[in-house]
Length: 471
Ligand SMILES: [Zn+2]
Image (cartoon, rainbow, N blue to C red; front, side, top):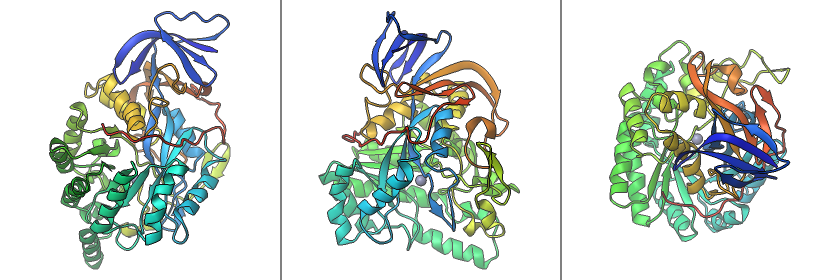
């Protein structure tokens, strides 16, 4: 048994002083003064005790543009843990040939031996054949109750509106949740072709060829499809004020739609893409404007968003130069593949380890989020929505003992060496932080102790998910 003594517990409901007893892998008691003879004691006085973060949106070991995202299910999980996140939900691509199940099997083959925190899967639906329609309900037996669809990436990932509508109807019928990427694929393809013809090849054209209005319109269209199919919907990586307006419009009219934003959309803008190293900021959808950053923060402060995910999908900035990772040199082709042509820059950036520390300082520390909003957005709400609560996202007897002891006073100059992403850059390099994870427990096992990594590949558990919740 392990007793975490005299800390301030922070949950989605508030903060209170309490002791917390861990018996095996679960929390067994929470109380003002827990007496547990023989238990090992961790003194948390002056510290905060948070439920481990739940990141609803990651892409580990994902093939893209003749390379692969540079964090796999070990290195990405390790980086998550250093940042206080102990549960991650990753997306399984639909295989080019074969069943959905074969795609899930392939992703288990990658993840099972490497997982270092607990994880679950979402299923991408990117081709809707008859056999896929019949197979979707069987995903529930594999612990998957979420279906991701795309309104962009014509000819690769996109479904037509009618197909998305069919997926939503099926999801509704079987108690599943549709997750949606909202952009206008037709407009993007035309603008990209026109930019290439005109010789506009630099990274900022990535954003200019994916205009914000395409996202705004797509969010509303998706909400309308959800309303017409009476289905629940979760919109991933919302990045602009206009998208947030549409989310509110739909929610105010009773549509059961939920919205996720990500840290990158709170801090960066199209101007970053115009920098000489602008490729570092390339992800889809792109950064917008500073006014959008501000509007998204307001949306978070006033509980208009339900979650903050990361869309973690890192690539090296210069994959020809090795970095040292766990004592060995590693180089993985990355953003340099698109030097001279923005359409060939792999889309994505590192974020899974940054989410909590960055949002603590620049959200809670800056007075934009209360501690309980911070916990709700980054842990409890995603756990509820995706059918993991109260096993995850809670500090209650019976919950998994996924616990972060957070030092609210630790000041650091942040960067690549703190977060352990397996890539050669960090978007928050040299940012000043106050407040940082000190110890991280996964089901009662200490996996991060200050700068020391005590976790192991294979110790993460796969999480078959229970009922999805609308919040
Ligand atoms: Zn994504």
